[in-house]
Image: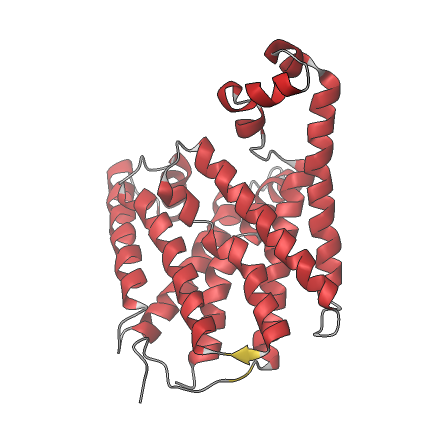
Length: 288
């Protein structure tokens, strides 16, 4: 007898391969975002330099808006906070190597990292005109540490755990699909990656992206349908990893290899869970 989510009614402990995979994916998203925080831009300014939102806060500290935006010490403090979040991610990467059910303090650090990652998704959401597709596309990234928490500290591969894996995957792929399909303006980097990978013209690239966007929607629904969900998982695995590695493959410059890797490798690393979390779902459901 199966549940309405098409899983058999049983629970079991997580296997070593599932734990190892969740650890690796959590490390990848934290390492990639740490790299971004330490060396590249993070959209904190979309909030901190929003005059409408920040003016009451600024005035509460006895400053005018002009004083605030021209104060170099405040700018340095903001940059320091960004850098410290990056350092926090790096330290947590080290702690994950020693995680076990007895070290419960690591659990709270993972919750904090998920909070920071979710806050980052809110900043991108604001920066992109509050488009819901932008917000939900980051679901897999900020939820990966949470899945590790449940695997380590709850220990049981439950129906609920598998269901929430599907929700995270579906939301991420729908968010991606809304852009690829053209519901929102198609990002230039989407088009450029298709042009670089397949040598298409602009029209062909737009058509392919529209098709992939439709497939993203279909697959997100199919994850919850009998007879289709296992096929859908494999689509998510392949497409998730493909879109992650496309960042470095299409932007690598053989004339400037170190610079290319420094700029684009972190974008690949923190997107690895887009294919990795569907792979986790495959392992925890393959006996069904």
